[in-house]
Length: 219
Ligand code: HEC
Ligand code: HEC
Image (cartoon, rainbow, N blue to C red):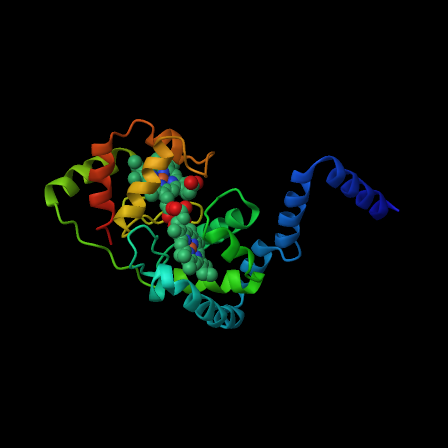
């Protein structure tokens, strides 16, 4: 009976509100498997983790076109995934799937993945080694280091490697860093409620250029 009532409410919502249709379709796409529970299971079971990692390696072959083989991107505007924190990656996967983080390419691709493929991909990329890009302008990178040591280190750590919730930024692609920081600063990032928005508001274009020169070369 309760189920029927819920169904009825959904039908009414569809008739009165077309947006509800898209929302429910999105919810359905991610329902079923609890990603966190499956991730915790993999972390507690090395054999399962190895199996999922092998699945992830296959998934990564599809992503290599943009993110590079092993997650070191060859396209400046596409982020490296190699060495990225697993829990952070999983959270981005969830946000692309439910529409909180928007990207023309990523949304559809992530929604097409099964839960085990998502977890496997996350395990695979976090186990790869990122290849930093040594700064071309040492003076600029030194300025960036000063800036980093005043503000960014508080959350991303002295080494820029973040933690479970916070992205690793050390060794990230310079163009992607620049684009992402500028969007946060201008209040145009799809990740609108991010801690990054208040922490970039005061940055000038020159600050961004300096920080990018430093961070992209960090190991
Ligand atoms: C057509 C190019 C393209 C392909 C193919 C692609 N991606 Fe992406 N991906 C991007 C771009 C561009 C971004 C950055 C989006 C943004 O600016 O927010 C991104 C971002 C991501 C992020 C967020 C990274 C971060 O640092 O926050 C993850 C995770 C990701 N992609 C996973 C995947 C996976 C898994 C696949 C394969 C199933 C894949 N991508 C295939 C272009 C691509
Ligand atoms: C108060 C904590 C905090 C501070 C300070 C902070 N960040 Fe972040 N940053 C985060 C969190 C949390 C994320 C994860 C993504 C999100 O929430 O948007 C993030 C994400 C990022 C990303 C996106 C990573 C990706 O792969 O897409 C970049 C780039 C970044 N931070 C750079 C910086 C820089 C440079 C500074 C210093 C100017 C800085 N952050 C200061 C918390 C912080």
